[in-house]
Image (cartoon, rainbow, N blue to C red; front, side, top):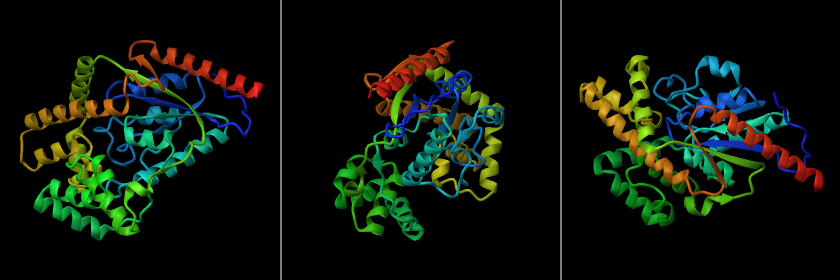
Length: 324
């Protein structure tokens, strides 16, 4: 197994990012890479943070997590949402600790905003949480619809509003919360700093229709493995169906099914449609024509091909360091 050679402290240490749409097989490929390189995996998935949300998020199994050290999985309860700023702080801390051990951090997931924040050096605003304000804004959205709430954000910060889908009530509320708690609009707070690492971005892709079929089969397996019961347990534990954690695809749809608002068949159709929309949105974050991403087709042996690409890149990094 390849181990990292020491790299001088004045050079940014290496980081590998494995990106791609949901269901493409990133977890399996990351485990294959780990068989060759001494990596520790840092999750870049906004739903793997939550305890008790295992089946519907396709969380790495206990066996996989015992075989390879994973970070930022099961770190909070579904009722306690993490902001982008908190995620970035904890991810950077994990990456720094992995690099200090002479191992290679492998950032894996499909949450595009998290990847962009880390790899582009965003400094997200750290406005303190205001639960009362959040609840007031949530009630306003429920009474008036999401667009009037988004209009309130546009009135104070048109730049931030333009980046947020009006239907994404959670993000609109967070942007308004930042403004009201700090007195500064989010667009003026979002600064950038050079990220503290050198990076190689690897992308995993497959034909869209093949991916849709894979996602459909995975959903069927989730149902067989107890996805409905998982949602039932979360609701029984007091996790609100409207909470940010439950916005993960499948959870609110199955919660509606359990409340008798729709049949399981209708819920599954809704989940499949939502999954396809999500794949298209991920395509906006991870573009196939992005020259910074080295794309690989998800197929047998791709983990070995990616590991070899990583080894070559690490060798180039060391060569540049030696000639510097």
